[in-house]
Image (tube, rainbow, N blue to C red; front, side, top):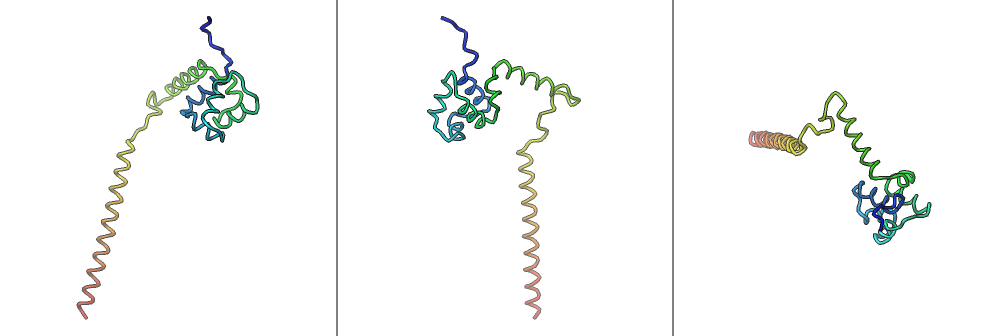
Length: 138
């Protein structure tokens, strides 16, 4: 019994690419206009005809060649190189990190809107007070 996996199992490659794209079988099925069972069958297939492969590639947003040439090792190397290159710039390892808290920004926006609303409300109250003075003067 051999423990070596087939390197050219097209269904496994499709499955790994789908997983790396954080896509469930149901989402891929919907993109292809089919059902989850059909995607499961595709991912269990060792080979796939060119037309179906092109359809899968389009739904995954990759080229047919990317599926055919996919390997876990190449993907790992790609991401490792990407990380290494991001650290080589002048900003250091924090180049891709967010520098603000989005929740804080949301709260600031809400506070600004609240202040604006209060100013508009006060303006309306001032108008009413002015109009009442005019009516009482007559």
